[in-house]
Every structure is written in C-alpha cells, then in structure tokens.
Length: 457
Ligand code: ARG
Image 1: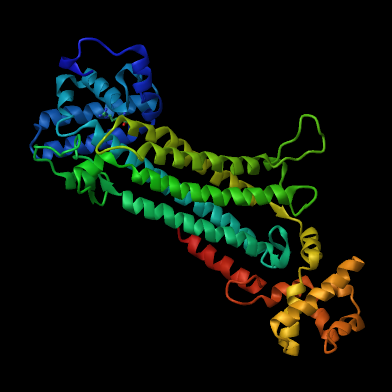
Image 2 (image 1 turned 90 degrees about the horizontal axis):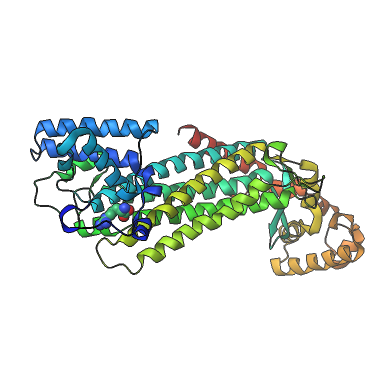
C-alpha cells in the first residue's frame, strides 16, 4: 500500500489492530461523495486534466454501484474505506486513479466523511424526535383532563393530568432537538483540503468543495481540521442527554405498567411473556431503552477519554472515534422509534389514575391554599393547620374529605363546608391555571401549540 519505503507487509496482528474497514465501510457513501467533490474541484482549478477527471468520476460511480449492489469485496489488508475505494478505482480506471489523492490526505478525507455521516444522522434523529413529540402531544391532547398523581421523591405530591406529564417529555425533546441542531450548525464546516495537517501547495478551491458537500464554509485552520473530533463529541453529548430523557420515561413506563401501579396498559405488541410465569407481561422495550442509555453515555465518555491526551494534529487514536459514535447514534435512533411505538400503544387507566391521584393526601396543598385564600392565614400557619388535619385523617386511615366539619373547625374555627370543594382531585388540577400549570385548559392549549408547531415540519 505504501510503495517505495516498505520491503515487507505488516505482521498479521499489526493488520488486525490497524484495520478499520470492518466498521468504516459504512462511510462508503460519504467517502465517494467527498471524492467526487474533490475531483470535480481538481478539474475546475486545472490541477487535473478533464480526461482524468472524467475517468475518475465514472470509476467512482462504478465503485458506488458495486458497493450498493453488495458485489464489492472489502479487503482488510487495505486497512480502511479510503484505501479500499481507491484500490478498486485503480483496477477500474487504471493509473489515472492515482491522481485522485492529489492535494488530499486520508486525514482530511476521514474528517470530512465523519462530519457528513454525523450531519446526516443528526438530521434523521431530529426528525425521529419530532415524531415522538407528535405522538406524545397527540396523547396529551386526548388526556388533557385525565387526572393522575404527581410525585416528588416518588411520594404522592399533588394531582396533575396525564397530558401534562406527557408534555413534560415533549419539552425535553424540544431541547434535545435544539441541541442536535446546534451541533449540526457548528459541525457544518468542511475539513477537505486541510490535507495531512498543513494545507497544500496546489491551488485548490476549498470553498468550492465545501459548497458542493453542503457545508457552510471550509474550516479555517488545517491543523484543527484534522485533529479535532469535537463535532462527534457534541453529537454524542446531545445524544446522551436525549437518551437520559428517554430512559427516565422508560423507567416510568416500567413502574406504571407494574401490577402494583396499574396506571397504564401496553398491548401485546409492546410486551413480552415469561417462559415460566404465565401471568407475566413484561415491558422489555422500556427496560431496554432504559439500559441502552448506558451505551450512549459510554460512547461519549469513551471518545472524551480517547481525545484528552492527543497532541496535534492527527493520531491513529482518532480512528477509535467510529464504532462508539456509530453505535451510540444508531442506538438512540432505535430508542426513539421504540418510544414512539410505545407512546402510540400506551393506554392510561383513568379510574386507577384518579383513585391514585387522591391517595396520600395529595390535595393537602389545596387545603392549605384555601386557608390562605379564603381566611387570610399566612401560608406557614395554613401549612401547620393542614398538617394537623392530615395527621388526624391518617391516624384514622381515611382521606381528608372524610373529616367532619366540626373536626376541621377544632383546628381552625373559621373553616366552612366550602372547603370540601378543593379536596377533590378534579378541582385541584382545575385550579392550577398559572402559566405552565397542570389545569386541563392549559394542557390542551400547550398540546395544540406543539401539534401546530410540529405539523409544519
Ligand atoms: N482509517 C483512518 C481513521 O479512521 C483514516 C485516517 C488514516 N490516517 C493516517 N494518517 N494513518 O482515522
């Protein structure tokens, strides 16, 4: 491969540790796209004669067709996708193929290929996240008024609506998508033409290749162009945060589908059985989404650690950017699809949710607020009165609404029977009309706002 300087080939184990073709062959479409842009530019600038450009272009298209047809033979001895493509090009077009690598190195080539792959993948993830948002917002609209318990510390806190809970994830996904787009905007500079590390003495036109490949501009520093992978790190960081969001929702699905909670039902399409326990309906897809977040986070830490000690410019260490990045972004894609499927499948059980919403004295804050609003008590005093009433009800094993008016008046004589209205969970959620609060009207408006915004995409 290296010609003149080398008298013998590599040791078997050298070839094995060195080769990346096993995983970078997936960059073939990006590699060929980059080469087509490069050779066209070499022609336009007069660096290569038109005949060579035409031969190379035709040859690259043949290689592309062979790869697409599955008839291309990838050789480990040729190390990576770049050398595999070039070697086959030489078989097809002869010595002219050797001119393709003028004013280019595999260092700027691989940096370009990876940026193109990450860019395409971020776009696809953005679209998938939008689809999950749509599924969530549609369900939120249907369940804007379906009361469920809201938790803090996984203890009953205050009633909320199922729609409100789902919209919380729509907001998170909205920020995830913002991060995908930010990462995309920053990565969209073209390293091609940085060559090995110092640029080139040929009169290339880097603006031309950047434009042809859909980049906003060429990168400004040749060393930086071949030496950094922050674009992959940033995509992985955005992916890791999104995976954590999905994992938290998955965890809630696991909890909600348990017999003890019974808040929601998943159909047979999204559950599995047990080989021994006939009653089991396991939420495996949710569990796997929860677990796969670990892989995505692992890929981010893995690449951060690969990069942290590297002197400029390129080091072979950077070949290790690929498997983790490919795996993590594909994993996130699978998780987004699985979550969208589950959300569309998920049916809340309103009776169970409503009953649970009232358990655990979830309307105690409503009682305290009533004492403040109607009787003018300072909130701290109202908190104490309410606490004593909760203690009384709890000692008797009943809900707040089961206390009699005289019992309540024993704690605070000015309480009237109007207080019972705020002890119901429906009233509680209906009263939370502050901006961003859980009142069904708010939830409906937010769901509609999202659906409208998502509809245009
Ligand atoms: N397969 C290599 C990689 O992924 C391509 C760049 C090789 N460059 C080099 N100087 N050996 O990083």
